[in-house]
Each structure stands twice: as structure tokens, then as C-alpha cells.
Length: 345
Image (cartoon, rainbow, N blue to C red; front, top):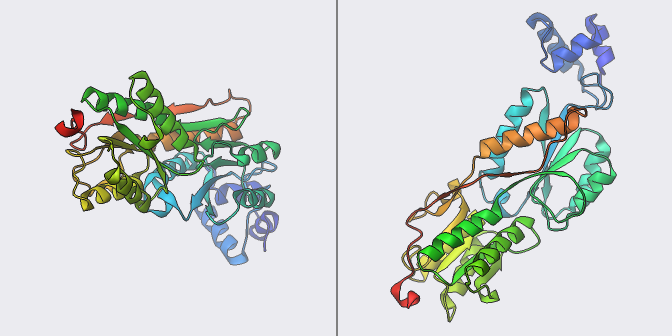
């Protein structure tokens, strides 16, 4: 395995020139750049974590830790790919690489994170799928690894995060349904300790309470965040003695299963039970009627996350970037209608 000094010696050029050529930096002519890349491939050159850009200890690489094997990531949803693409584009303009760190649902995320840190291959990391109490945050803080999270957490301490406005989405949905005459408005969330589920349920409960509407446990449905989970919610709703007239859901796979479950039991999404989701998704493009949900600019989200983590990691003298909640806008479709007369009376 060849190091950068040996590579430079073999070409009879400076280490700085080799570094700029390898990292596609300006100041190197195309002929020299091609020579460097050809020799690097021929000799098996691998950049070390401390010297890629001649800044001690910096690799010019940010890691994105993602859970796989369950939920949206395993269900073909485009959320993470859209956000990741925007982050990568923004980082490339600064000469920084974004690497995915997939952690399977059967793996211990703390062990996975410890192994990642000991390799010394990243300068900072972005966590996703935050929990209400997330021990990964304390681990990174203790390790003095710069990080930010996509999603909030109740874990104590100050840290950089960016999130979607789950509470506002639930609140706006409840208010709109109440204006149409709905009173029994249910909420369906992924089971477990994902913080987004708790935020969405809290937003639903706060809005319902402010409007004097019921918030009993019979209106809260927590199942696996998948199509199967959504179908299970539909089966429970159909059999309920006092059936809700509307359902809010913050999981796109669950919505698909919920639609199918209603239809299989002779109920129509919209006319019989109004349904509101959280965000637009290709997973739901086949639904009829189209789902009422919220528009979120994923490209903007990815760009802002990239700029925030780059500032945190590579610009220590700059003001610290601040936590941020991304704006959303409500899109109403025929999946929301006034409650059926039999339910409203």
C-alpha cells in the first residue's frame, strides 16, 4: 500500500500537488492530475485519515448514520435518498465527501458507532432516526466527535439538530378536520421510542385538547411503521364500537397499508374515514383519492444540513449553527371530507 509521500516521490512532484490532484482542487493542470490518478491506481495508493488534505487529523469526510432493515429505509421510500443527494451536492462544492454508514436493525447501534469512531475515517457525523432518549448522543459528546442529528431528542445537553415540524403538522390537520365537523380524530404512529412519533402524538393531543375534543387511548394506534402496521390499524378501526371519522398518520408505509385495509373492509378513504398523512412520497402516488399531506422541501433540508455540519466541523471560528425546524405547507385533497352524516349526528 503506497502512502502520499511515496506517491509524490515516484512522480517527482510535491506532496501538496499530489494532494490537490487527488482531491480535485484547483492549481493542478490536467496532465499532472491524470498522471497522479493513474499512478495512484497503479500503486494501490490509499489516503490516510490524517493527511488527505494536509490538515492534521482531518479526512474531509462526513458520515451519515442510517438505520436499515425496517421502516421507511427498507420500504423503498425516497426521503433519505433525496436528502442525502442534496447534502452530497452541497458538500462536494466544499471538497468534502459524504459517506453512508448503514446500521442494520439487528445490530447494536452503539457498538456500530464505537467501531466507526475508532477507525478515524470521518471528521463529523450526522445521526438519523433519533430516539426520545438516544445514547448515541452522549457517546459522540464524550468522544468529542462533532455531530448533528436529523431529528430532535429529549436527551439532555446542547447539540445541533434539524427537524421536520411534526407538531405543527398534526395541529394543522386536527384544526382543519375540526372545522369540517370531525370530533373523533384518531392518530396512527410507529410503535417504539422514535422521537418523531412522540412529537406527532403530542401535537395531535395538544390540538385536540385546545379544541375540547376527546384524546382517549382508543384514538391512539401504535403499530409497526410499515404497510402491515397500517393494515393492522385499519382492522382495529373497522371493528371499533365508536369508530373515528378521521385518521392522522406520520408514516408513509403505514398510510398505504391503512388505505388497503379500509378498502378491503368496504370503507372508502375520504367519504367514510378522512385520512391525512405527513408528507408527499412516491410510495403513496398510487393511492385514490390522493392523500392529504404536507409539502416539505427535501432539497432545501439536505442543503441546510450540509451547510450546518460543514460549519460546525470545519469552521471553528464561525458562529455555531443553530437548531432549526423546517417549514411545511398543507395540501388538502379528496382524502379529507366532512364526516358521514351518521357519524356526525
